[in-house]
Image (cartoon, rainbow, N blue to C red; front, side):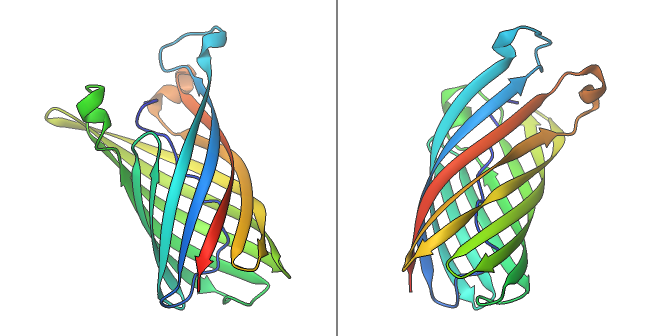
Length: 205
């Protein structure tokens, strides 16, 4: 589980970029993995990890974006974002999305089984002047291809944080848990992520 469930941050507001506009970003992420999938009960269950994410976004319309993200573990994430409530000037905005990610490197370098994850994020943000606060819950489903069989695991998590703008630059940060829902939870056999990150974006107007 540990090699295939590194989450992307998605620390951002619900506002979209605007038609024909873009963004470039970088995020430093820190993770705490509480791993009991092996049944261990000592301090080695708690594993600190870190990664670097690079992202690029493009506005398809005034209310919809696409984005590509990659991180230093070799994961690649593609998502779509659609604004449902508000606009790029409103105090409150609400957007939904759909994303897919995977890692083409792990099956080649670590003899790991191929996998794909699908995500349904919800973005909520409150804005005042050049600052904003966000709460972004997300549900995900991971499919691991083990030979002729597949293993599916649903996940849920949330990112909470905020950011501020200075012209075309943005500084942002957030934190939150990611928890897989598996039948082994009743046996206290699971892995829990807690992730925290800080990053910057440049907006191409």
